[in-house]
Length: 207
Image: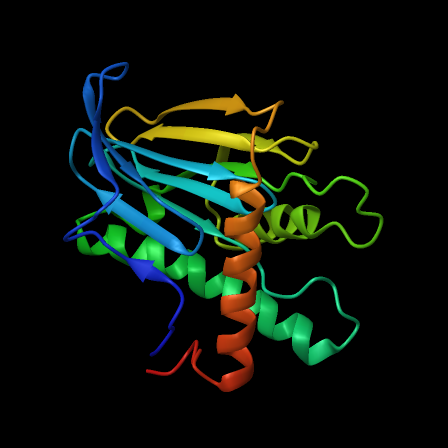
């Protein structure tokens, strides 16, 4: 099973720092990354049209977060849409499997989901953020994972802080952008996963 542009850095994570506000270590994940832990840390990410899913086993106090985007923008080609959905499924399964390795029980998983904002001003075509949000809700419903909270769509980017040990999520909507970093990161990420899909570098369900 190979995927070139989705990264697990549970062992050595470079975006790790101490946050005085939370008085805890913080792990920052970027587009195409995920992180799961049993530690008393905070996981943070910044979302535009991408979606982040915060998963938790409340009994074992194991939690994790991913940050993903479906690579297809609503093309009418059926195979493209199918490949896009398969990528979303794979992104979810990576996080779930990492949590299971840490001792979580899939039957106890609970979710909180965020993102899917329409952050590109003047964009009148297909709302990729809406499609990401819809996929995530449909996936969690199909997998019988209850959604305890959500903050989706709208027109603002979000900064999401997730505390896996308690399950608490703090969300800050970014209503004034000082630069294009969020959109640039997501655009670069989208191009990477599209390129990987076209070149055959993503093999989603090979045993």
